[in-house]
Amino acid sequence: MAIKNLIGIILFIHCCTAQVLWPDLRIKYDLNAFNAFYHMGRTLTEIKDENHFVQDPTQQSCVGELDNGAFYYGYRLSDPNDTVLSVLYDVQGTVAGVQAWFLKDSVLKSPETSTFRFDQVWSYQNKTVNGKEFFVSTAYFVRPETICTTGRSESSLDTEGTGYGLWFQRGASPLESEEVPMKRTDAIAKGWTKNSCFVGMGRHNFYEVDTYDETNCTKSEGYFLLYNKQEELSGFGFRIQGLVESRYIEQPPNIAISLILGDPVPQCVLDENTKHGSTTMHVFFTSAPWQILCL
Image (cartoon, rainbow, N blue to C red; front, side, top):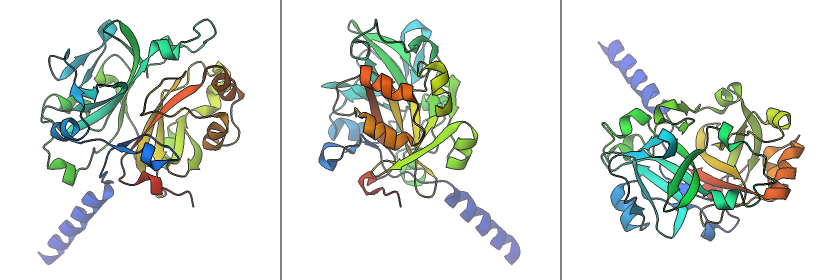
């Protein structure tokens, strides 16, 4: 009996320590920490009371509709003065994901010179709100199929954290979402390039950077991954070609892009950034990302 109890304890410890517990949800990187790392409420009550986000008045149920038959899961709340960031909550009011809403007029300021094939990159879905068109990218922190069915209780934030995984929507349906590896070595094996570490951000992995030159940077993935020193998933990011104005985003210069991607940097990345600029949004699951080092 003692041996069985010991085995049970060992299995329990392995089970409960194998998963990284994400204690927070913070948005944006900046050298000035007072202008970044914005804490987002992880319940409906917190996001409304602390962040003053408001619920999408056009959304009639937990299932949000996009154009052309596309949709997402979760109640969407956003800053009434800044449409770029939306946070998603499940049927119990617990955080379930985030979205980036990139205004097309900003992204395509020079449509005659932009060669990016948004129509062939599933990271971006289309949505028109009040006559304005957006490219929408969606990431979930729990299995998408649970968001509008069972959801999670608020107490799960203490036991499971902000989420227990990461899924990127890569199609018209949330059920077409792709789960991201929690370990960096597994991500690299699945095509997420081992890029460089940046202080205050972490270790970056962009998808198949070695193929960028083949398509002249016209079909690059709209997401990237962030890992900590232990090579555990600690965040991610959205990216899009073009300049979008928002307090929640970054507009990296070529020097920063070169440092983050590491050698060799595809020339088309720098060329397109010079012509059109680029917009990124870092999303952190840690409470003090500004303390992230690269030693």
